[in-house]
Image (spheres, rainbow, N blue to C red):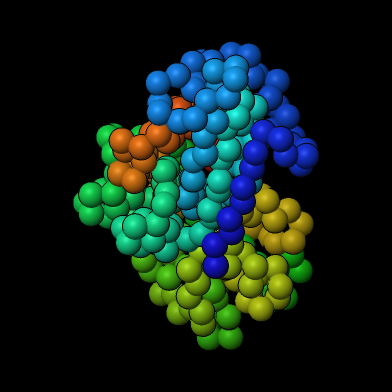
Length: 275
């Protein structure tokens, strides 16, 4: 399931802590030229009124929602529509012609699939990194303490599907440790895995470190040696659908914004690593 969020500069929703911190830095970002020469409609003040649609991995939902708000504040008249879901599903939608202007995937292989299909315009940039995390319900009723405990036949383990970045990362980590995983369920997004663990429908699940942080006391993170070796890199790119349209310039500015210092500050606060 995807979550679609539309934000406008006239929104009455208040930014969260991350967005507030970002807004405090608003004066330093070089986006003042927005609205000139992109082909979009302009208001009486000469400021471009335009909308871009950003497809992003589900694990980016919190920081990208904050960043979309602050970006809109930087670019008056702009609107950023957000569509969050599993990266593999989003990639398929873009290849099939979905109207995305920017795509941020949870791993390089998934965005490369879009690029090989002709769905990317220009270069691909690295956005952030993330580390797989083994989480259990906060009470840990099954007494899981190590990665090897997941081999017990009484453990209900939930993973992302193998083609989903969080699923590939978990399997790489387990394989390196010589642990055989036998999930009872395979999900299309990391948020679905986290939801089953927090709801008590699973004894354990692999998410990302950022998801475990976001869940707070609802889960307990089980330390896994060498988890950093299975870290994933998030890439971001403007799509071919935006190229040549009135939205391309705004899409590129959004990519510049989230890969720049202010965007990186928000992502770091959310637990992501710098690329």
